[in-house]
Length: 222
Image (cartoon, rainbow, N blue to C red; front, side):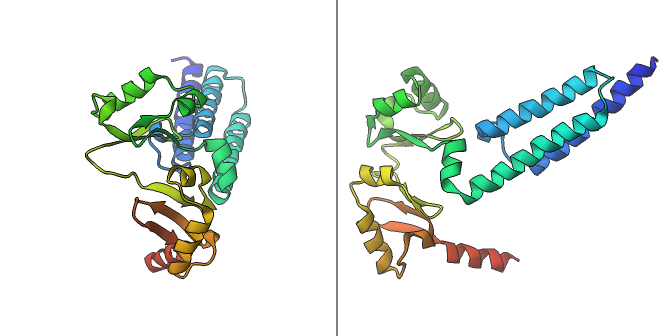
């Protein structure tokens, strides 16, 4: 067997193990759950490894440096998006409500460059044959469509607070104001919106999780 074959086998095995470790460290996500940044980094890493296997003259340490740098950039961006909601919305995008109370939002579909055929395709994938069956449809930031049938609920619980920030667009949809949210929180002894990590309105009342309650649960686990 040619000596180059052994080098190819060695490099292929090495980069397979390295990429497996790096992707494992990037987190447990299915292909459909990858964000745009996750996908770009994954493709770049795979392309760099493929080029290194094809070009045996390229030093391994240069390839490892490139893969390591991409991994570090990915970890850094993941940390920043986790901490800062605005940055997360810019990088990962925000969920978009395409159907609200049975009505299609054509303006939002145009903004997302989402066609009616795309909508029907994903509805059929969710075992929905007719658009008239749908009360709410939400296009998630990863491109998947979450749909809720009319028979399932009379009101879709919309997120009002996420990561301590107010979702103003959803407030408009339920015809509520920031002052109303503050009043509802004050009834429960919460005096600042930023104390709440997540809150949703189900048509009757506001349900929420505070940062303090989540921290207490995390401490109990440890």
